[in-house]
Image 1 (tube, rainbow, N blue to C red):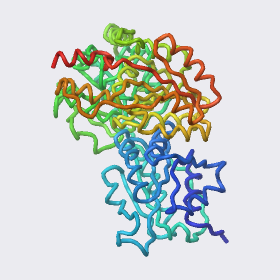
Image 2: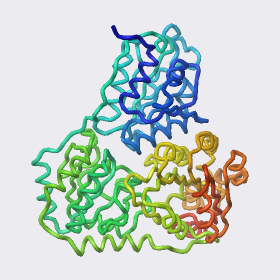
Image 3: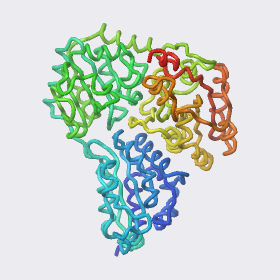
Image 4: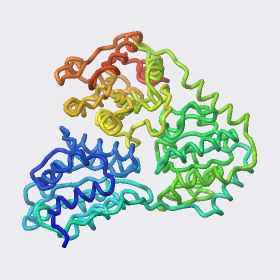
Length: 551
């Protein structure tokens, strides 16, 4: 005779059985039974108490990116869920597997606008692949299985599950779940051979990778394939760590601030093989790098989600397949041909693009990222949020390890700090660096308390220029010298960090950064470096006064 457990415990056991690595959240009275169930399994499914639901959701999203299994977050109803919705939006646009569990009012209270009541199936429909609400305790395992499977299937993404309070307490038979293998499409053999033939017949082929799901083995197989034939290999926006940037065919990232020579090379290519990216606004620069709807290049688009194919671009060949499965199949198929001059020129242009440049101020940002590269191992995980500070990182830092870049393609501010903490907790053997602008940092800086509580050895780098830099840049371009809303009044970030118990240093000159980074990396816990950035250094290719003068 099977034993009985609460539906809340059945949920927690089901997560463990499926391989959930960690749960993040802010406690709430609407899911007390789940919190109680987590108490008994802290060694198998640690619950990380965060200080804001947005940060908890961002940590779960980062977990999904790093592990390839759904990141898990628990929040309370109403304000908890609405705060957490930003993490769902990021997971949706980034195609990251994730599940948000939401405490819900009891069935007897529903449809009365009870305390903090929301119908999440309607509210979250735009930011999830699927949102459900457990109707009876007996169906808890079914609903969990649906949420988990949907998050991993095809084009991966977030799901959400509402947990009514009364259901959580009810007893159900204890059953064990099987480990779940993601459902992914595979290409037909004719698709692979036809694409190989198209590349073989090309004069200037180009491979663009992004999206997911990817495996380290597939990314390496594709890199080896491209290197053998000297085919330029680029990455979509914020997917730079899919390919070792030191590769002899790495051509750079096709996103915001892309190398103009790379953009020209993409336009010049006669066959473009896009494996995994959605070809969204950021990668295509407002859908201008490929003509809509019929690109002038022969475009082959491979994507895990069938509905994404043909959505904007009517490619010459559209293939519904996991990018990892397709990449390994293509590498095994092989092509005839060698594009030595074409491939080497692309890599040479990228190396030149990453060379240090001079910027206004005492801190030379391109040199700073060279120092960061030289002082950290290949498996260092670098997280960032959104802002102009990231343009310097993306251009001048060299990503060397697979999936070592944690950055939101959704452009969400406040992401870098919680993502860096999640990386340190999930992969403690990998150094974790979280880079944020002053505006970006203050959206989640309270999570320093979480880093200290769990001794997450993250190095936080705060780039302080006293403004919302991206918006200021656009203001100067469009409304020069008519500033509104973009200046910031900041705390003393060193004192702020020390108040939480972190070691912290301020960098005002380039040569101060290396010693500060050494001390931060050697710290016994999290540490922070505040870096004073001249306002004029708004972007690698522009200054504020230059933008104003041009406008």
